[in-house]
Every structure is written in C-alpha cells, then in structure tokens.
Image (tube, one colour):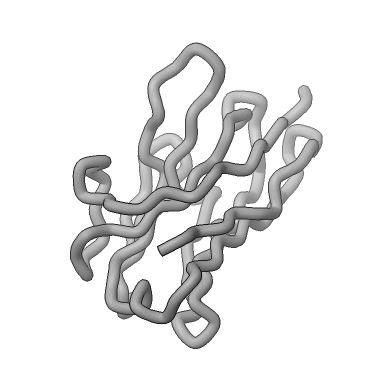
Amino acid sequence: VQLQASGGGLVQAGGSLRLSCTGSRRTSSNNGMGWFRQAPGKEREFVASISWRGDTTIYADSVKGRFTISRDNAKNTVFLQMNSLEPEDTAVYYCAQARAAAATRDRRGYSYWGQGTLVTVSS
C-alpha cells in the first residue's frame, strides 16, 4: 500500500488548509486511517483518526474543534480539513493506514505511512 499526501503549504494564522491522502489500492477502505504531524525537533504526534466506516473519529485535544477528518472510500481518500490554523500547527503532516478497522491514536496501530506534506502557518 502506498499513501500519497498532498495539500500542504504556507498559510497565515487563522487561515485554512485541506490535506488529502490517497491510497494505492482499495483495500485501505477496510482500515482505519489517521493523520500525525511532526514539528522540527519534536516527536511525531497524533492529530486525528477515522474508522473505516467513517462513523468514529478521534482528535488530539490541541486540534479538537478546529480540524475535521473525513474519508471517501470510493476514492480511497482521507481528508483533513484544518481551520483556524495557528503557528503551533506548523509541521510535516503524515497520513497513515491503521492495522484494524477502528480509529486509533496509537502510532503502533498503523502499518503504512505516507511521505508527509509540509504545513507552515505564519503569525
């Protein structure tokens, strides 16, 4: 499975971006998906996850109410809508495919990772 993330870029604080992640084959529709991010000099951290049906979502406290994860299984794509962006959101964002159908915040629960897309939020 290959995951291709896109949609990153430079945005001012308070702005919005929409990240996309497309899988190489349809089997990812049976798996939960997630977004993680890694800022310079920091550990990779959980951002959001969605179950394969799309009926369960989990968010990190730092993005709750600002970010929304969704998926389109017919297009093998998961999205991360990011609103009210803050400079602290600056990071490389990675999408990942979970080992199971459920949403999870545990990095060990993911088996495939995309290459990352850079999000830079200026103040």
